[in-house]
Amino acid sequence: MRKNFAISNGILILFLLFSYTVFPQSTASPQLSKFQIAAPQLDTIKTIWLYLPKDYSEEKKFPVLYMQDAQNLFDNETAYAGEWAVDEFLDTQDAEVIVVAIEHGNDKRISELTPFPNEKYGGGNGDRYVEFIRETLKPHIDASYSTKTASRDTYIMGSSLGGLISFYAALKYPEVFGNAGVFSPSFWFSEKIYEFAQQSPIPANSKFYFMAGDSESQDMLPDMHRMIELLKEKGVEARQLKWVTHKNGKHQEATWKAEFPAAYYWLLQNDDHGKD
Image (tube, rainbow, N blue to C red):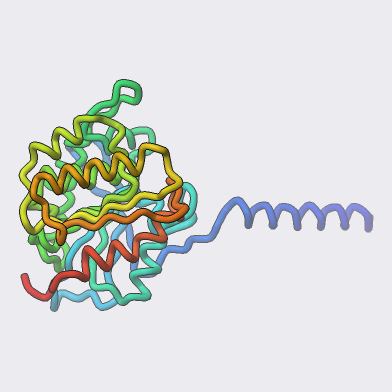
């Protein structure tokens, strides 16, 4: 009897330890909430994570940062391989920005976040995804919250395929997305992104923050620098561009988490956002 009791206790302890390891606790900030919205452009329902600053009120207006892959940004419980801790950072800064993050479409992620198809991986429905943000999500956010709606106060950011689609959105609709954070961008996915950048007029007030790690794929940094040189040759001024090589940075959330504060400061704090 005593032996059976000891065995049962041992199993219970192992179960509790296993449960604690496999199911991490939520690390999401109290400033976060979620809602769902129809995305007719994608024929689906999208889950949106919304971060409101601590001092949010209707008395003043706030810039808005749109981000990709919401599951990986705020909460270890939903993150694929660790979170960016965007909410924790913004909480410590008492940041005056609204973050609107879109959950990726799981098996549709490649399709949604690529503006041009790849021979091997398919994709190419990025236009519909960007149209969803521009035509459906942004109007809803602007109607529901106290936002600054001008392009200079609208930011878009992502990593990997999310970096690719964020860059594309800022090129295609600079009158909507005036600033882009482009982390470890998957420019390899299609050569057409370079053609599109070459053909796209870029306003003098657009801003781009590029970042990649030196321990990613062998093509990552050359591809990123090729795009930066293309933009410079087009006449994009130095004040509009920032590029960073993250030492020992790999293609993973830990790298993007480490770089987010610097990107935030450069993109959102380099300007006076007190004016509409």
